[in-house]
Length: 243
Image 1 (spheres, rainbow, N blue to C red):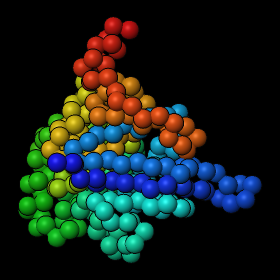
Image 2: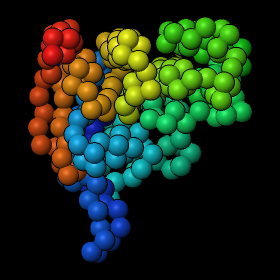
Image 3: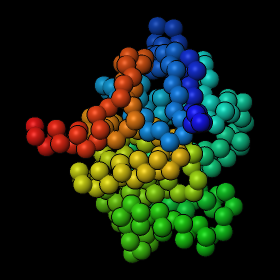
Image 4: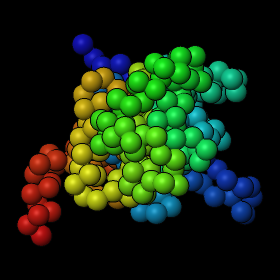
């Protein structure tokens, strides 16, 4: 049975500005990510990686083309419907965490569930389990973002992205603030979530991290220039250890 396509970009172009000042951040891009698949996006700075992630998660709209999540064209949704889809179906790990300063780690992680009507008690229980999964204990769960290290804040952001039944997980350099050991644990977590049926899109500069993906898509100047299967993660790590 063919896995269901969770994310699809059809001839997507994103242009910022107009006329001589127009910047083509993404150009005629086609991409499909199926349930159970983790796809790594690589390319130099300014190649369109973050733009692609923002479009995939409905945080930005294409200048032309279509973005579909589970068969729904995002442009067909009003603001309320789009917010509901992002809250229920899309988990996003931002580079700068985007935690709410006035909420504890557990409250930040539980927020998507509470906004979707889950009781505070049930949301907290799921948040604590998600935080434990990324290596944070109950004491750290009750700390505010300014009481956490950068690595701990990133773990909270990852827990928030994975909580609930998210069908699409978008991660923008999710290991940037983490040491190598913790970073590998986070990638294993993303891999497990995809193996359980989610679709994942991972932006990374690290070839070893891309080794956890099923395939790698390379961007340059807003265009897909190559798509290939990476080395197995274990093989990639061994190569890095020997260099």
